[in-house]
Image (cartoon, rainbow, N blue to C red; front, side, top):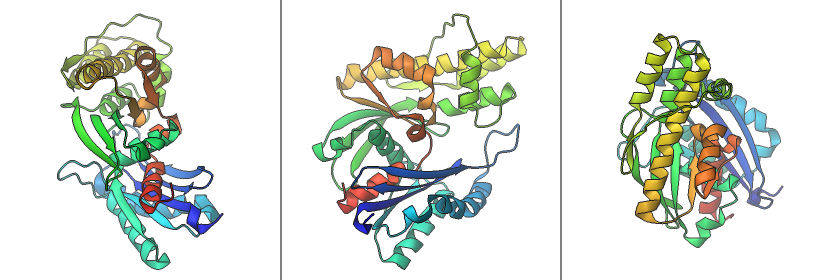
Amino acid sequence: MSKKQKALGIDTSNYTCSACVLDSYSGEVYQAKLPMPVKRGERGVRQSDAVFHHTMLLPRVMEQLGDICHDVSVIGVSDRPSCRENSYMPCFMVGLSTAKSLSIVNDIPYFATTHQTGHILAAMYSCKKLRWLSDNKRFLAFHVSGGTTDMLLCDCGGENVIDIRRIGGSMDLKAGQAIDRCGVMLGLDFPCGAQLERLANRCDEKIKVKPSVKELDCSLSGIENKCRQLFKSGADKEYIAAYCIKSVEAAICVLTQNAIDKYGSLPIIYAGGVMSNKIIAKSISERFDAHFASPEFSCDNAVGTAVYAAFKKGLI
């Protein structure tokens, strides 16, 4: 593989250490990632611990890529969570310092972007929509994870590859937080998404929920409160899990419809770990012309940062 064809992506987010090589000639990506260790019963990691773990894990992740990460011509890295003012998390500094060092040693450029942009680009890659970058396409995107529940208006083109503007989302608890807090309460290991989905699939009862949504904003804190009430009342774990997931699904569906009513029938991409939930994806796909990344591109990954660097370098 020629050096001119390869872009390296790095992402050191709060719960996953990721690296990726994009072969711009074939369009193939080669991923490696390791999760942050979280003690049973806990709902996350402190930033000081995350920085330590990334420092230890990133060399192992690069080793997993092996020879494929040799002779890259450009590096992409996430340096902050989102484009919002004062967006910052120390864990991203591990990836950024590594990218800068590799750039100096190998005399190649690096390009920094946001974790959120990486998620959107990874979803576009998975959905085979990267041509939108050259077409200056406008689209809507949802970034739904443990740290973010954002509805975004995205415009391709320009210096930033994609200009992202937050137009709505959760005003309090994030969807992933609601799912993880419910899961930990039920005795599941953090992160709880996949386990909670398996529990919910065993629930045969019909569940009615009423999402708290006002135009393009929603409140999700009530989901945690209701799940706790159900738990204390002795409700089945399967029912509680299904209620939690259905509540998130209902809120996202209403937000989607409201966004369509306001901005018209733009394409919609769903990204982030929560959007790998098959129950939620199935419901949204039945109602809207929606594009979902496959699970390996929905959860935290470095594919989007590699795509970003490749586009900035003119490889794609």
